Image 1 (cartoon, rainbow, N blue to C red):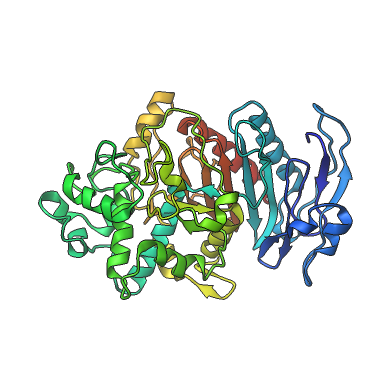
Image 2 (cartoon, helix red, strand yellow):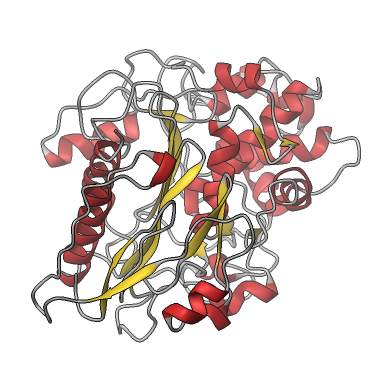
Length: 460
């Protein structure tokens, strides 16, 4: 471990070190961060342990200075989670090494099993100047991991009979009609089998942070060019923009998309550090994305905050990329899914529809967009393995962000070059990693495959 203090966990606690700037104390099925006043000495930390919680972190001095790594016996498991501490230590070391090599700036990882957090740690910095050490309280742009929130919103609407998987888009958004668009259904949108090319921009120079303007542009310019249901071609924008708008239009209260997410997901799950758009009280903790490679799209917003300014707009409403959150909040979301749609007494969706949503609906078809990436890297194309909104690990052994050691029913979502969550029902495990410094997508796949495999190997 580099500099400062190395770490060990006592009982069922989270592990921490000098570059792990903030800690979490496990209290039942989730963890909550220590308050700022408790982030100093061991005595101060010990004093802030809430009642009925497990032991606080114990610190020991680092055994070797930079560039050596102090090592301690990590062969035990972290409480009832059954996660090997040596594997969790190794995962942090791998992240440290990649950050030191400049592959990305930093990240926050949160891993839990059997409802207990085994690791919640911040590593590295928020920006390339290394002046902003990351903490577990930092807020990240979720990018396409936002689609998971939209998926759950649509699944709720289907449970309530407000939508169905075979509802035609034109039945809810009549402006989106004519030609093959008339045949397009919710099922096609959720499985990325729309027959629509993978559009990154609708009109040159168009602002993308207002959903009503995006929907108007989609209805004006987007056409279905292939028969829906034939090919899998990941939709970066259009599919989930339409899904978010449909959820709003069928809502009895006609709430806006961002309000629906707040009312139906964030509030019940107590995801207090999450928002659609950059909520004012979260701006000070928000990491502004730094794109480390050439991106196939730009993200301008009405505030003219830069090429990718839409990710910093307070009023942004983008159901495909517009969420912000902490790793711990996404852990709560993942835990809800791991538990069959309920967490801490709050039922978000039911286990029946969740089971349907996490089954492979695309067979062995490749994802055409990612097939292009795979071939450019010399990789064999991987089957798309998409359920009803969620990505799946599937049976094949190929390049995959969920790794090669997770079970085939593992499901989750990811965001461009930087964010990932998955839930493995067989391992009873949740994994979240939000990072700073948006990587090339091929490099990102290999980075997360490695971290996912290390995490899965920690389960005993």
